[in-house]
Length: 404
Image (tube, rainbow, N blue to C red; front, side, top):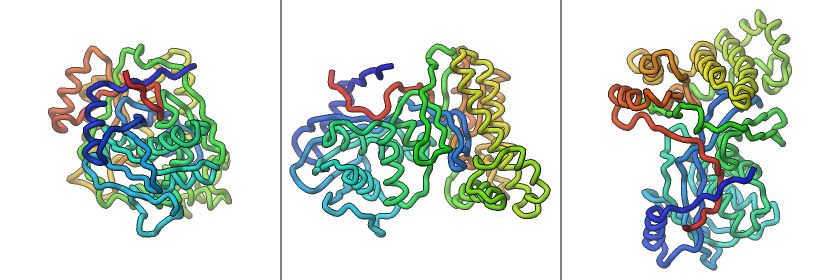
């Protein structure tokens, strides 16, 4: 199936041209885009090399680009300082850990390793994928840089799935974050995809044949208003506890252990790893089995079964994975409140679940069109104006845009 062309709207082109001229002078030559992503199935399964269902969305990071004839990659993102990287210095720098230049340097380094002759260019970027939105702005940025380099200097010979792996390499090795591959893959490939990470060197990526525009439901991402600060330990504990279970059973990750073998060991595992770790492993086995059922339901056009499975995923994340309320929190339970009022306004219809990492950030809902306006108004009324974002699935992944 051929991916539709992504055209650059005149208003967006004008904004990019103006931003580019202010940052670098003159006019850009080419334009690129990479979308944000939403996780639809497989909550906290990727770090155990499990299965996920994810999709690109119609919020993106875009760039106006021009070759500059130097050894410098210069990227100015609206609202942020200029990032400059010398392409003759493509090894990790300790002082760049957790910084934007680390991502640029890492992507460029990997392309050079693959035989690409990377040269200097200027890029001005704007984004509707807001940081902290749960739609993975960092993955969109990595995919954008990879797509630019792939098209400018490598005749687009690297597949978009490989662009995703290049983004992951940059984030792991240069940026210093041991992320999985789901975010980058969904952004790079576009549309709706299911990914099996069991073979970590060659994840299995398959498109899912379903048109969300025809299902009678809107995809909503709702900002709970929670603060991500001081939650690093909560996020790290989930893969840590799952891997502790696997390690006790002599393996690296849970996908290497049969579900029956795990259940047989629960009495020992409760003593050695604790009950929360056991519960989180139970979530993993259930959630990992749920993803192919979701895919099958969509491909068979059985949207009601799909919605039922989305709800099951949400309940499992809340009860077993326990990534809704941070440990010890009483006064602030933002994600839990968001889920509760979401359930109220849906009134038994559609589906809802915690989205992404959990604890803070966003939840996801599939809302019937006939109640969409009242749902958005209700959610915004309680969580704040603009909390509920109505999105759509984007067919294109990372692409060069055509000017109309």
